[in-house]
Image (cartoon, rainbow, N blue to C red; front, side, top):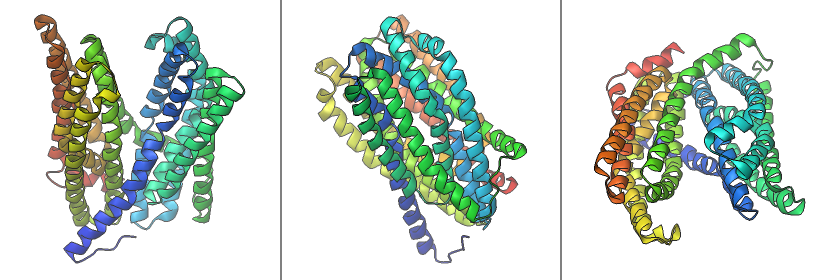
Amino acid sequence: MLKPVNDIASQRKDVLRNMWLLAVPTFGQLIAEPAFVLIDTAIIGHIGRNALAGLSIGSTVLLTTTGLCLFLAYNTTSQVARLLGAGKRREGFSVGMDGLWLAMLLGIVLTVILLFAAEPLCYAVGARGETLRNAIVYTQTVIPGLPAMLLVYAANGIFRGLRNVHITLFAAVSGAIINTILDVIMVFGLRLGIAGSGIATMIAQWYMGLVLTIPAIVWAAQSQARLRPHFRHILHSAGSGVPLFVRTLALRVCMVATVVMATRLGTNTLAAYQVANSCWNFVMNILDAIGIAAQTIVAAALGAGLRERAGMITRICAQVGAVSSVIVGLVMILVGWSCSPLFTPHADIQLLIAIGMTIIGLFLPLAGWMWALDGVLIGAGDHRYLAKACSATAVVYLLALLTTYAIDSLLNTHDITRTITLWVVLNAVYIGGRAVGNSLRIRNDTWMESAARL
């Protein structure tokens, strides 16, 4: 249970220490998870272009599905951390068990649906011919691991709430290593092709699920928590996660719309966007790690009834998010102008990449500040507000994209102008809109009331 610390300097030092102890391992875990798809990509690339294209489509289906289920981790983290902060360890683990049961049930349902819907989904994404066949094979072989990945999300929430993130880092890194070894054996040794890659990833996912779920169940049993499934509690867990699902869905729609927009703006703009966006997504893991750390320590403070400390944590986390993003932003600008030849031999696309990453770097402090506040509000359980704010931002952003496309169609602008416009709109409206929503919410203590009602 948290205890008030009288000295302000000591409080600040304590908050910063807790932030980095949580953020650094969390960052390692966050970048290890996408390694599954990267490993598959590197190995399947040696089979052929149709297999690689099929992997791209299949992994899009997988990542979109798992991305929409991130609420399992966010929701469980907040609830467990608040209850532990209040000294209610048994209740905290009981909530965690509800999250695990929900993850398993949701994973089974989604697996059945996706196994039967693999072909129409891959076709809808754009796969045809041999690419479609490979996409279906990969999707149907990797999807049985979906329940395990959702268990990983829920278990991650438990361990983040406990501030034991080293076990999640171990599971992610060891899972990536196992995936690599199995990939080589399945694809090249047993000559199973893209199916072997999917099977290897599925096995690695179940390994991670068991590595995290078994300790969670053991510790829950030691705390005399409720282990058996209880429909009412599982339903409550699902209901409390709906606003976070809506938030995630709104943000996913924005990113898909951005890809569609880049596609409409021409091949050069799309190619440059893909490279800059890949770098941006990597950097977002740094900001997400800070946000998750903020989520955990704010939730614990509010659970302990330390509202003044929660307010101080909010200010510190926002500052850390902004300041660290200044440094990372400068690195991104440097990488954009010096390393773009590593991604393409075409000078015109190299210039577009550099321009895009420069704009990202300039706006990154705003993104870092916003991401930290996102974590704070999630930790406080202010999920309904975030769902409304992100949905409103999505509507405004989609209108901005449509307006941008209409103007470009009339003026037939240059690739440089298109790239600048796309990234400025993305950062100013999508990131800026979310930043405005978060800043308006933390002006007073209203956001803390959500935690009090839980």
